Every structure is written in C-alpha cells, then in structure tokens.
Image (tube, rainbow, N blue to C red; front, side, top):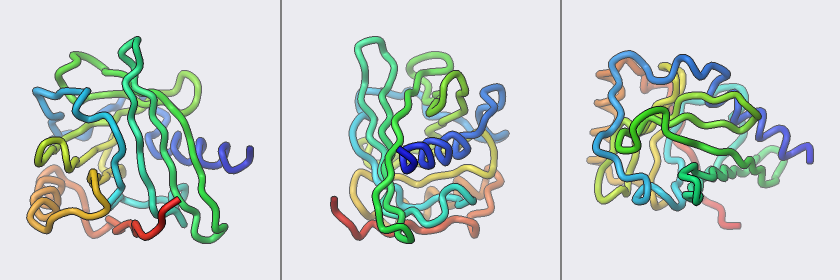
Length: 177
C-alpha cells in the first residue's frame, strides 16, 4: 500500500497540481492526433528529473482507452534503491478537441495537470511529451531504445521551446518483470 501511495504522490507531483496551466509557452500539441494509435505501452527513454522521480528507472506508461473516451493510465517504475517495482493508476482525458494531443492527467482525485504530446515520429513509435511547464519533459518510445536521429530531433525541438535539455536523465531500461 505504501509503495502505491508513494508512486501516486510522485506522479501527482510529476504532472503538477495546477490544471489551469497546461502547456509550456512556445509548445504546440500534435494535431491531428489519433488517441487510438497512442494506446499501449511506452518506455521512458529520458526525463527531466526531480525529487519524486529519484531512484526510478525501467519506467513505463500503459494507456488503455475506456468506453467513456477517457484513458486508463498505468505507470510503473523500478526503484533501484529499494529494489522493488512501484505502480500508480490514473486517468487522462482531452482538455479540448479529441484530435489535438492536449490532455489532462490525474492520479489523485480531482487534481489534473497537462499532458501534451508535442512531437511524434514514426507511426506513433516515438513521442516527446511536455507537462505544464519547462520542468516537465519526457522522451518516450515503443521499444527500450530510440534512434539517434529521432533523439536529436526531439532534443532540438525541446531546446527551441526553452527546455534545458542538459537536465534530462537517460533512463535505464534493463529489467524485465
């Protein structure tokens, strides 16, 4: 129970408490966007780290479209200090039009925060995701690695928005459950 609470708190803070601020200035969400193609498992390749993500690697997010149009979000990560898996379950929904990749995510009650897909490559194989401000950024992949050309394209895009990409940590993806 404590593990679940810790990860829930971490993810809540990860996406922030403020639903009113939803996308960094200068960032544009992908449009047109097809939510069905985004569903499934994504591996976290890189992230801007902060206190509540410390010691987690092998992080994944699984998205499953629900009949009501909302998305069930299951995030998992391996705490390599505690040597145990942690998981949190949340929900996501569009903030506006369903063909624009501006969503809001909640892992705790009524608190939602921005989840914005600002870059896609391949056939929904690689994603660049911005949170509510320049302290939240993720590079995701359908596999445990990412081609150098895609990585560089995402890094340049993030820099052009104002992200300090030197803050990114590159997540280890070396464990299987």
